Amino acid sequence: MPCAVGSLSDAGPPTRVMLGVVVAGIAGFGALAAAIGSPELEAIDHAITVRLQAMRRPGVERAMGLVSSFGFPPQSRVLPPAYAAVLWILQHRLEAVFQLAAWGAAPLGSIMKSIAQRPRPAGGRDLRVTAAPLEGSSFPSGHVLTYMGVYGWMAIMAHRLVEPALLRRVAVGALTTLIAAVGPSRVYLGHHRPSDVAASYLLGSSYLAALVVAYRHVRSRGAVR
Image 1 (cartoon, helix red, strand yellow):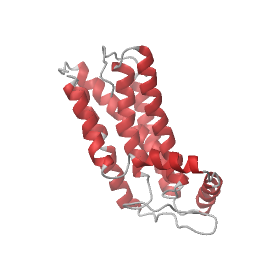
Image 2 (cartoon, one colour):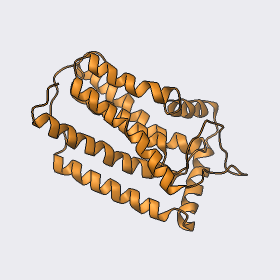
Image 3 (cartoon, one colour):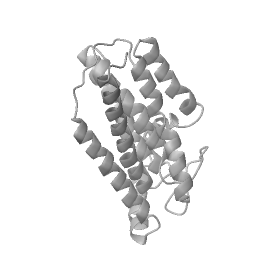
Image 4 (cartoon, one colour):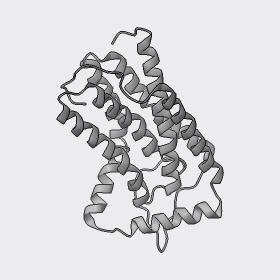
C-alpha cells in the first residue's frame, strides 16, 4: 500500500448491492460445485485449458509464473500480514484489521478444498502441468480466492485512501490487474481447471463484498480508526 494517504470516503455501491453480490456469488459457486464431474463441465474445462496453454512463449510463461508466485510460500505467508502492518503503522487501524480479515479467504479455500476433493488436473498429450509446491485438492483455486480477498481489499483501500489521483489510479490498476491475471495463470500452468478458477472468483467476490458490508457497519457505529 502506498504511503501517501488521504481521507476515507464511503463512496461506492450501496450496501444492498453488495449484499446482492454476496448472494449471487455464493449461488454461482454452488452451481459450479454441483457440476463437478459432469461430462459437459469437463469438456468445457479441457477446451479452454488447451486453448490457453497453446500460447507457449517464454514471455508469457514468465509472466504467468510471476503472477502466481505471490500465492506460494513463503510469500503467501509473509506478504498479507505485512500489508496489514503497513496500514496499522499509517494509523489506519480498522482498515488493518480488515486487511487481516481479508486474508481469511485463504483458510476458506482450504475448507472448500477439503469438502470438494476434486483431483488436480493431470498432464497428458495435450495438457501440461508445471511443477510447483501444490497443496490440497483442485476445487476451488486457493490462489484466486486469496488474491480476491487480500489484493481485492488492498484495491478498495487504495481507491479510498491514496492521494494523489494518479497514484491512486496506478495502485488500483496494478492490484486489479494482478487479480484478473491470477486466474488465467493457474490454468496456464496446469494447476487448476477453468471452473476451479471461476468458482473462486465467484466465492471471492462474495467474501470481499461481505467484508465491505461489515466494514461499513463497524464504521457507522463509531469505530475509531
